[in-house]
Length: 398
Image 1 (cartoon, rainbow, N blue to C red):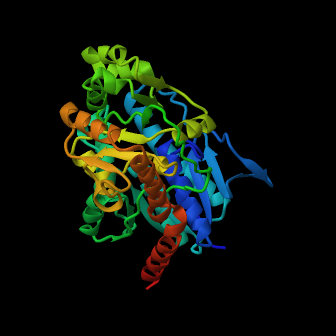
Image 2 (image 1 turned 90 degrees about the horizontal axis):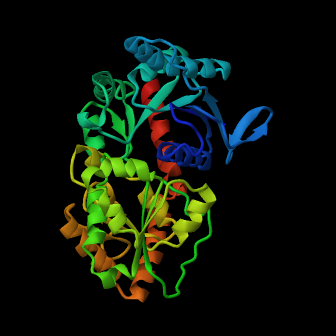
Image 3 (image 1 turned 60 degrees about the vertical axis):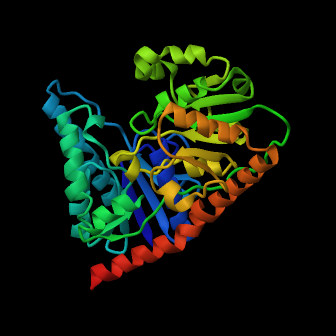
């Protein structure tokens, strides 16, 4: 069975949205008859051991330990941290006897890691592809060094293999213009991992936002939208925030933090839930609420929470921005899509969701689940991914 090494700087499994992306990519490779091996960074919490090999859902994986920052010089720490990951990944690849029969898929925006591992792969005659899911703005970086590293990676390192899995057409166009072969690949999911039932009893209408993507999603807009509802409307709804600490949200909101107290009757913040608890909560939700500005970051990105929540029949109530609203979702069928990112627009979107007849809401939840099965299930992407890899092999060998 052909091996594909997925090389990243992510804690696998369950290390957040990036780890989930890697999980479904690996499962698609398994469905296509390949043997994926994930190399990441951090702790290895979930595994079944087979001959001292960590296995998660049939995926073999190796996590190298986090780098300890020991130097008191900032530039020295920066260099050590950036070259460390590539060295660790190469060390694991050597132990596993990387050869020209193998394949590598990178999921990192660290040019130092990419260049170190790609140099070793070329020496072994191993071909590779890159996954790219973001195009960040300068304002999202804490230092000029990190921004420089990201820009260099985005413009130069990621295109080195001439083979890219972009998550959006925005990114696909960029790398096609750099002469890369591309396969447009959305965030995948597994709608069959948990049971699917819709609670049809009369209850409050539940909205959820999962995660803490302050650089992409507008919490101000979402919270203000609920504030603008009438008291009667507020009595019929509840808004759940998961994966975000209240302290962090208060800091983000700044002088508008008083909104949390004003919304205390309709808002529940879940800073941390065990995964099984999160799944049970998601099963009870009616709508996923995401308000986003239209900019470089959101045009390039594809929120993993969209297919994840649709697996449980949760209907996306989302701003019209990005590929998920353009080519995957259908307004009024499996989702409710609104233009703009203001509270005035947001409250009208909430009212549209609230005023849907119960039978229509149930039908849309069923349609959302069907979309997860037909467009985002990793199994339907397996053949396309394998075909893409094999074509890249053929081109590289010619």
